[in-house]
Image 1 (cartoon, each protein chain N blue to C red):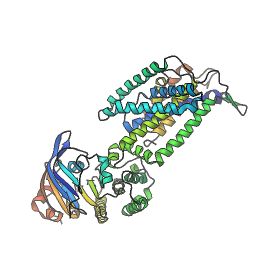
Image 2 (cartoon, rainbow over the protein chains, first blue to last red):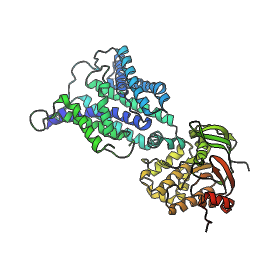
Image 3 (tube, chains in turn yellow, red):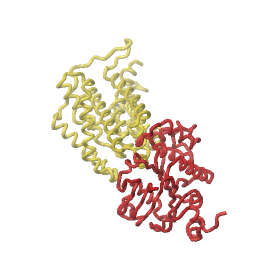
Image 4 (cartoon, rainbow over the protein chains, first blue to last red):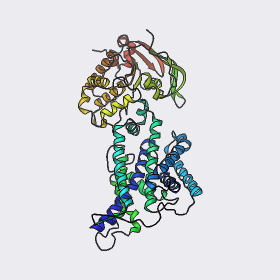
Length: 296
Length: 240
């Protein structure tokens, strides 16, 4: 039982948090701008490298140096929107989707150019696990990841339901033409979407970097499970994406648990396949995603 | 009294293709002005042009003493114009209260609570539904949500594009009564309506468009009484 919690459940929740933080942004961007943002993984990577640089320069803990990574990631997406996505806004969205592939490659190449392509780590040496109640042995990082996703969920819900900008975002996602007729500032809504999506991506990138190591493909390697999470939650619904991320993370980790025999149920090498299997089944039987409603 | 809205020689359409050709139209303060005509006459295009949702080829639109031709849609709400599109005119996943709230964002009213009170007095049906997603309401109630949203910005001019489209006859009468109430509250109305006969009976004046051009204009009562208009546009039979 303790083994299940220590080695499967908590790591699953932590991995789910990373997916969720990325998927929320992908989902919001889809809801507001109506395109699948394939550069989102590389925005995460940029956030991780920005934070890494701040750690080098200041010696702070990566989570304290996070604001630097967030600023870098947000600046990068705002710039990409201005230069690449905005001019394509009135064309069919496939143009923007392809452009986002290009932006992904640009981000990754710039990262390789600036920081090199070798593996880097935030903190050297082995991290001792935390022991709680003498039984639960978990990494501090995993608890931090879970705490961050809880805070993000509460903050996001408050933002979307209580603030003027959040409600405007939901309105634009619901009915962009009417939002314009009602006089809403759609460009401001687009900007807010990038700021929130970029910030959460940077946090996810740092958590992913802390969990393994930092290299230029860090975020790109996570893009598929994050899209799976977005679809699972009902594309365009950030709260759904959050839930979808948690579900995908949990399924990936729990599928390797020895449920029936002493062997892992599914070889951990195939764990990302289980997430996709769930996604395919869901797309066939419940393509609208787990939650109803939009952007909430 | 000077006109509130003047459309002068307007040619407009979509993607460079004109739908309306050299339209002239005037709305005086506190009037209910109606645009009628057969399908494809350019009625909706005329009203959408005021709201910068078409491409204007030539001509001008003036609101009060300001030239508004080509001004971005978003900027018209703060100037005192609100519009209710014909279809897809609510935010379905937002609650009724949030739908109404959206109306205040571009043009914050002086006293939000007072304006909401006034809007809910006009649409008492919405009082019990404030926390329900607007997408769950009936067609008639949705129409009230979108009218309410438009009124929350305290507009001087309200543009209505077929406010009774798809509604049951019972709601049709209520919406027309509401339009009279809204005018009584000091809001000027320019509207397009398919149910021309009923609409003419509440309109002060009406313009008849045919093939994108001005065909006739007169008071609602005179147009109702005209044999030619009745034969061509109102289905022929004499009103009972």
